[in-house]
Length: 222
Length: 148
Image 1: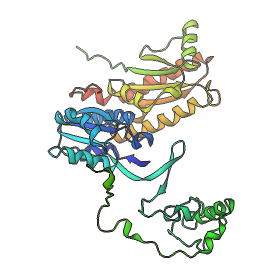
Image 2: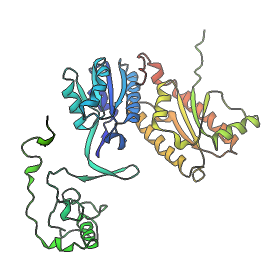
Image 3: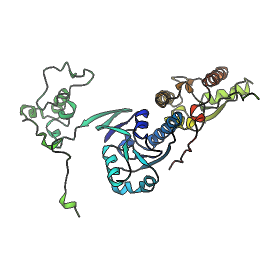
Image 4: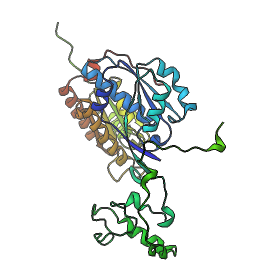
């Protein structure tokens, strides 16, 4: 899932300072699971904004709404009326959600209330970890399901480096060396011979190259 | 004519297994404590979320007291520890907003601690009285939109 975290209340107040009526729009998908932009967080942030505005003597009306998914036009439609009766939208969706809403309602300012951080998983209660860099050319099959692009601090495809201590990463000793994990996993599944292959440099043209990426499935187009 | 003395309005979220029972015991023992607290019984303080505290303040509470079981004594093992973390998170949020974090307090007591509960309430009322009325209430001008 996409993991995000909220911006601070002073930052949010600064973002919406020119508006008197705003809609705090939550998203019921990834950001609900990572406790950043679901219905509950919409309630908390809306309350915080109302109180902060009152303390500063600013006139501010805040409406709350959470839709199932902000990155999908079918669900965005459900927010049409609420968006129409407000001056601006403070979206608690991920970066994709904010842009999807903004593209749909071009006459209304749509602001991001969250900082979208990464694609990751819930490691334990209250702890999320990045697992995927969305590099566009997955190599997980070669590394026992552990991604060196994301989890190795040096993004090494032919690791480990010479500086890991025990099973710790030299960049951050609190973290396990990704290559130690890869070695252990490949040994466990009997695929250690994969490490004998020297991998060529990664083709980075699949990501962060030439602007945004698009996937087109002709078989699904109408 | 002298202005009316400020009487703080304090919402007290009390765990059914400890603080609520101790408030009951305080009544049976005829122990007096200020009538400024509005007690809300909860099945466990672990049931409480940040949203509850925020809504209480937004709707005019001058202070919020969260009273859970002694640490290690929660009926649901660690509900009071969850509440402690949420209270701390909310205190940080109140500071971000510009409110005094002392308006929110969590205490741990057992069902037999009627006298300490009364002392806690007295202290909380005095703390909030010194802080004055909630600034949210004072500057209240805009109407709260109902939750959609």
